[in-house]
Length: 125
Image 1 (cartoon, rainbow, N blue to C red):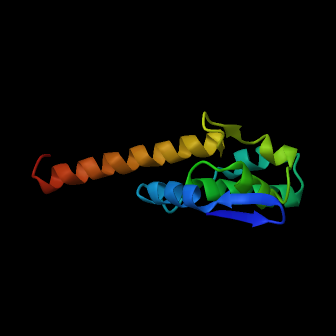
Image 2 (cartoon, rainbow, N blue to C red):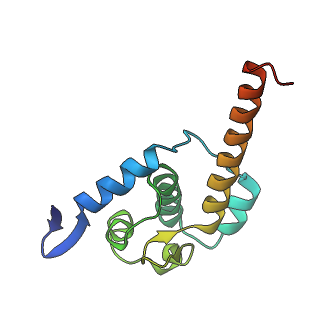
């Protein structure tokens, strides 16, 4: 199913839904926001652009890499300063490198804690 706004394709619901379901299996409800780094990285942005950027970071955290249609929808068009904060993967999906690192770091911490809990549960200390 494709969703259109006027003549513009907003998103392909089937692809987005499948991607989100896969991401939800490994979803973490929170991430660390390093405020000093965030302020430095966004100092040249307007308040509106900062809002777009933080919403896109949250969207990536909850749903994985972002389609161009989703980027355009959040930004209400192509906002170059916001788009520059994201890279494209081999499938053409957008992602922020810092968020990607934080997601990987949180997944590693979660695996480590699960492994430690399993060892305690099984009596291995």
